[in-house]
Picture (cartoon, one colour):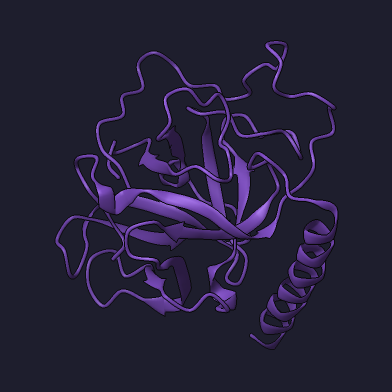
Length: 218
């Protein structure tokens, strides 16, 4: 426990220093693989949050909530690639890509499954796994709000759609609505290794198939 706490403090300190560097040298346009940041719910103003407290019902896994505290260190998430095909560090996340969100403080992945959330009675969202190793329930599709966007742009909102169950407290809603739009906020954004990822030469790394269906959103 003490070791994990020290690792969390060091992670937050590194993120703080790196954020100062990014602010001094200009921000990046896109959210990129390996970036660590907070996700802001545009309607409520809360940041996606978790800590090592289990649900008292449902799955009994680590709870996921929202917090209005912008300084909260338990709200940092890191972009990782799909379980089937990891992403290149610094590569911009393309709209429609499947990703995982790794919780920095507890080292578990954002997760969902067919359990009912305790308050809203929609689909439960939790954190699951150990040291980033989880299962298929950790896979989320990036749904860009702006249909003209090719990549996940930091200034624009997105939805996260659960791949396995198709759904979106913080809980999984069956339909799109104004409550499940998120935007990347404070954090460290990894610069692309290629000088121009906006060209048509960039190949999508996600291994989605035509059989995968997405019906609902986070």
